[in-house]
Amino acid sequence: MTTPATSAQLLAAGSRQLAAAGAGLTTTPSLDAALLLAAVLGVATTRLRSHPEEPVAAARAQAYQTLLARRLAGEPVAYLTGRREFWSFELAVDPGVLVPRPETELLVERALALLPQSHASVCDLGTGSGAIALALARERRQWRVLATDVSAAALAVARRNAAALGLTDVELREGDWYAPLGDERFDLLVSNPPYVAQDDPALAQLAHEPRLALTPGADALASLETLARGAPAHLNAGGWLILEHGATQGAAVRAALVLAGLRHVRSHPDLAGHERATEGQR
Image (cartoon, rainbow, N blue to C red; front, side, top):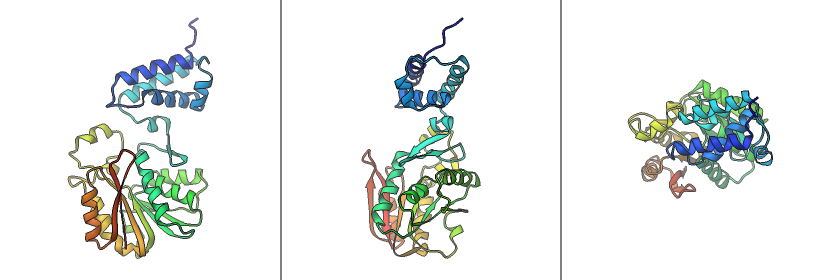
């Protein structure tokens, strides 16, 4: 009878396979391997470290190898595990939504800094999995939070996440950008819209994620400019618009916000030092 492999052996082999694929696939091969094995075993990654010699049944070892093969083919870890950590909680994700990035947490930070009051009205435009809206709702329980998305599939994921987090007061509406808002105004509009041009080579590495959430088409600034132009009609006096954008788009987004008549326009860097979020006030 073949001796079952231990979790330590499986992790080491998986890490080697992922590392051999190069940084184009992942810069965290050991973490990826641990997240996949933990998902297969139904345990926390800390369990893998505390019980490295624990044997893994053959069926689960095979399931792990299957996930490794899919990861090597480019599928994001979050889709393979069905989970992604964001802010201070976990979100369910699937191929119908963009995988939330750490850079997007900057939008949450800026929103909390700009609106210190206990009561406010907020709209997250293009919410996807609900990451931004749900983070704000958790941090400010008295805020009125609305989230919109043109994708019914994305809203279904956001709805599941809201229910799992007990944030059933977050309102979800289907529609394109400002269309679902009517004549409503808010103290804050926030969005992480698609901002990658359709001919950008970077899209090849994101092939498993929904194209609708990544690119607005040939003009990478199209969605950002649409959001800037429409903001004044949906902001209360003194209200803010915060947009996530590409690392080289800060100047163009600032110009769009100024053209829309917003003031106090400024950009903020992400942890890598790239301009990642730009805000303006009505």
